[in-house]
Image 1 (spheres, each protein chain N blue to C red):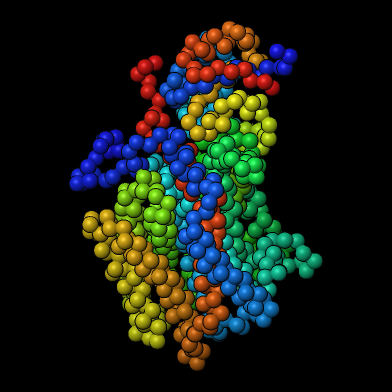
Image 2 (tube, chains in turn brown, purple):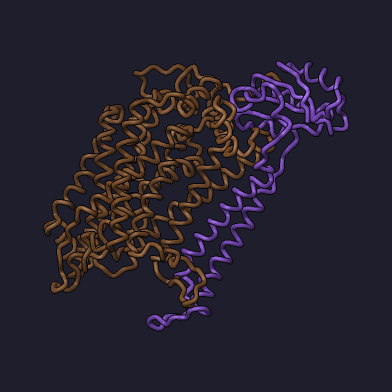
Length: 462
Length: 177
């Protein structure tokens, strides 16, 4: 119980506390709810949200053009039938995983430090899954027939193929989206009640009141609430592992060299958590600075996230190593060629940048001083985000563009629409995030109350 | 006092105090009571005499229904509704049905957890008498409330008020229903 040591000076080696000193129930409530209830929206919010919104508009324009014209506007070709759409899908889904990991797995492991970052990490999951879902949906070419992906009775008498990883993916991702949304909303209910009671404007009171569903903090309700939350965490934990496992099956079940590998499920799950924590860091560092939340998202949070990134990054490194080793050890010409082509072929630059971004540069986080340097952590988190995107590019494009038959080889070049769609989803993601931080408490208020020292019931006086 | 009374509400400032108060009230023989707090307090749930929730059972049933339903969906589609012979593999190729079965299990169990919790708690509930208490807005901020309800056999307006005051309540108010 190292958390109990009070009054720690900056020079000691023990980690800083999960919450700043001198906070009360009232002060944490007022501080966090004031951000959502503020009368005046900060100018910087308008600038940030405005830019994100413009990028989201670019996405909608791209989608409009895409639906009217067809997916021929993308650079996809044969043999590279899966390109930016699947790269971005896997990238976004992976980013979402850290939110579930923080809210579910760290809850089950009783890691108190998760409390300040779980809410916006969950929101990040939700918005990342929303961005991810667009890609396969639009890659179908006829998104208005997307319900055919589900087993819906129809006049043609046709049903989905349950032996295919692609239908597993439909089930995994839609379950993941549903459970993440439920988990997030259930976590919000007590805080929505707080906002309902703290709101001064009639309209805000009504809206928060409807969303809070009449929550009154009854001890009986809390008991069932806590049970439900814990059970959801227990359900979300295997779910989050299964989702990226199923995503990796999309590749691993195929016979393409570079995809057909048993290492894929653990390697994909670790990569997902790696990129997800990088994204949490990318978002948390500017947020805590701008809204003055250093007492809630402390250095301890950033240090812990850096350590998790270091650990998952090494697992990813092991994955790269094993891919190379297997290619040699299998003595299979096509596997060997695939790795040689990755390292020295036309996309070698992408491969080596990926090694640089995901493996070499993040090793600086071994240093305690580096983990304490907020600006450096921010830069590393961006680098890892880029690295994880490149990883998916390398896996998908270099494996597909030169497979078994040299006569079917081709190069892949993304078009401007590939980029406008990808950058557009970043805009959509950020727009949703800006709306979230403006109107909802970005830190779970009631959970912060429970970790304050005065929340403890003292039995001695009884 | 023409209006019907829902109960007597006592307001406390600290979690320890309300837990002690709830225990005393339980010892005194009060049973129909509830506490309202800004965050979950495990000891308080026990103090008011609430131990058991059926929620885990509901979630288990949801999970089992999802598991059987998910597998049956794959089985029925692949062998009965739309049998496709692919490379001579068996129609009931159950290992490939496991991912969908698993996802359906999780989905139904999670839905059961969320909607089961809301149903058992009786939410959404737009009106509740405790919201009439003047300072009840603070129950979602930093105050702790204990309400002894009028339906309790031991309930007596003046007696209960005096009892709650003796527990060190900051404020004691009547709750109109």
